[in-house]
Image 1: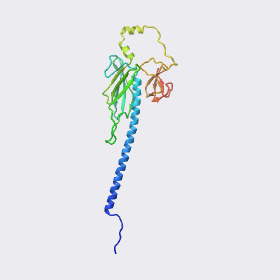
Image 2: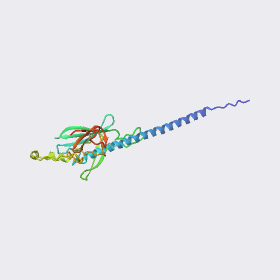
Image 3: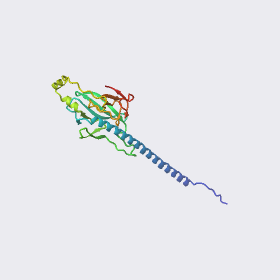
Image 4: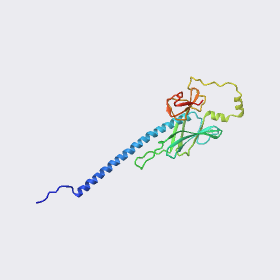
Length: 243
């Protein structure tokens, strides 16, 4: 009499294990690719935020200029902007002020982390931008187009009308100006649009301000204590009066 033995053969066990291995591999690949896509999506959102903040700053900073070039102007007073890469992979915008042709002050308006996206392992490809390009409509309705390299090798120089005018004045003209006893008109305390310092932007409730940004408000200068938007300079928690 034959014994009826039931069970799995070796071939069946090998096929089942192979099938389980394929399922695990495909599931992990789908999960890994989805996770990377999600991370790059977040990075792109942060990059857009960095891009918007940088664009708003450049508009405020360059809107009233009369000189813009990669070469230093003939005037003695001017400014420069460049982007440098930090050791931790982030980028910083550096603003330098020149007084009488000499460096007077270095300022870092802000640091951004996601302006340049890089691909990881070739799985998710993101565009890598080595140059930040911008177009600004100036106050005189002309269009300014420029770019800043992210490796710090490209530096732009600019100057305001008063910088060009002061540098071109002769000593005689300056002496005549000093001997003029006419008292200058004082800015109205009630009119926040009065701006005696043309190189300092007026406060705008729609702009985003970063720490150490300086604005004019009702004829006075205020410096931001921390990043804010829509907070009036009279708010001592976000601004301090410097003049």
